[in-house]
Length: 378
Image (cartoon, rainbow, N blue to C red):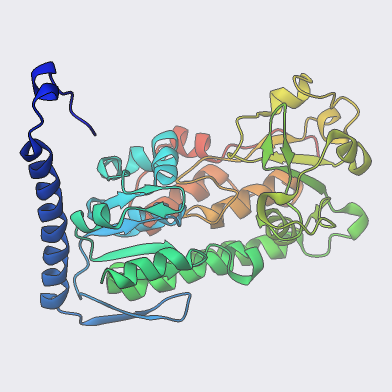
């Protein structure tokens, strides 16, 4: 940032005015690097972690300062399983979800985390070093950033967001195991895996035996506005949710990966889905489809049967893996097949899940708002 120069200064150049700020910046940078190097050299690297790039990372046995870089949903799980005050930095995308959803309410300390160190997939290494992290969690797909952190001597643990080709539960399980390696017994991996396994088994049992002709045909709207309509093809999280909940992804024939499955309303007419699930990566809501605000959906079966649902925004955006993933699966299955889950009370399930795994007590209203019972004539 340049400081304004007065007319008298402009007439008589004084190099020292420009030199000293530059010198101060250089000295500050050198100090930051030296401080980090001393920290790393004196830390007791008593713990080793094998990350999702099969790297062995040495960490201090007492991890107290954590940065979650570009693995956005992981912040929700870290904040719920360890002291949330330890999160000194998180990506702006993670922070936006924390402010809009439940995370900032149940773990308000995370709202104090620094977000200025990163924009998109680009990180400012010097800014990260000033935060003096004991560990930085990085998206395993961002190998450039992993190498930059390695070169700076910063402990970086690479974490995948797409284990098993977008298998949400495999990814969730992988996160739990890595966090157990990093934080030790503070993360009760066995209890978390047991609860996730219980919900997965319950869902599988209740949806087993549904004939293909009777399976609900689902369209995911990942992004939807006047300019763009994006769904989930075979290689995105929507495929997992459909297979795990016993339904059919109408866009499974699309091979475009991640958010590359761009479609149009004519394609929707051809598929004529039974249900539409709208993610939290778009501002669109069911009323936009029912009113025809952007396109005419009146001939689509899902709209005619009022089977258009907004996916919950809990601890993170529930379409992706997050701390809420087991509950998300149960909510999708109950929403699409309510007659098979009549004895399942989502409010009570949500309260029990948060209490047993996170030590958080949600009121009935809070739990009901998080995973609401959906209207559905089926």
